[in-house]
Length: 211
Length: 211
Image 1 (cartoon, each protein chain N blue to C red):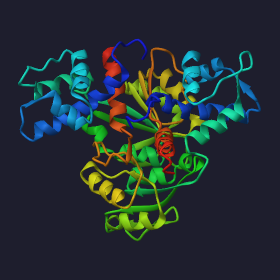
Image 2 (image 1 turned 135 degrees about the vertical axis):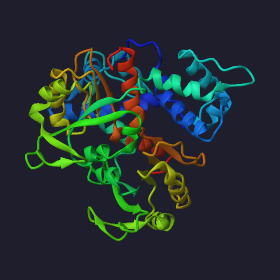
Image 3 (image 1 turned 180 degrees about the vertical axis):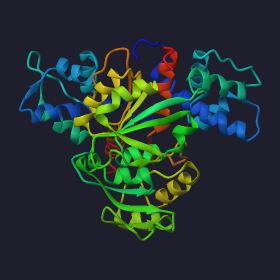
């Protein structure tokens, strides 16, 4: 991801802007100022304007941004205007939570194939999908042309699952296992570090002597 | 969190260093170079040295860092040397996943009270804990002196739950609901943005025309 000039934090904020714009749009408003966007996002307005300029959006002075155009632009920039087929590796508690998570579907991420290495689970149906054997990841995702994989299995098994995804032609992995996956440079990994977020909270509280 | 001079990203990386140091320690090594730490973390060694200096750690030239001392220092800086009682709000799929997640317990985060607003769930036992009515959050966490809350309920109910946590004296919130919670400045919120991570992945793939 180091190849991209736009800061990672600006990219992360795009999601936030998109969510806020959706709310403003649903409430029937057509324009929004950078100040209002900033307030709702908990940022300062200079930051908002700077972020949006990266993506070619310039508000009209005194008028602000056109809500639906800005929303559509961000959606398109993020590739969220299409349906994206997704493979889920690991149908444990976390996997099942993601499987029934509406937020993914609403954004076009459709979990189409699910895998586990637990023989007790393989063959069972979850959310209308048959749990497949992890050994078949490569064949299956190649067949279905799946580009994105989500890994929710323990660290010890995560690298092996990632290898199978890569062999099957995966382009991006959302990784919940607390390890740094080794992948070729053409594969993008985004880590979701659950424990690290809690540790961060612990750090801030500890610093304020609140623990 | 703006009050702290240490960059948020450095704090996030502390968790990564800690995890890597634990692995090195378990493998029986006593020292580690910034270069090796960097390689394992997928960073450059200058970054590692810079991060650790913030926390008063200086490696010995040619010798590197003392693994167990550095591990202990980071653990202590992060407040992870104590047990931290935690309240979980929302015993849905995600809440249950977190409830049985070993990673939290290993780091001293002990979920002691669990809440839901679903009458069907209240009173039932999950992982040895009785699910309590969300209306009793404030009383319960005050009684148990719980400082950290985890919110896993939908956005529509998240602010109300946060208010109850704050009324009960909560110091920090780990928030999985995709909204910006409004909290007093003395309360620290760390957001875990599941959808935003997937959207970020979508952005990077889209930019490389892989979707």
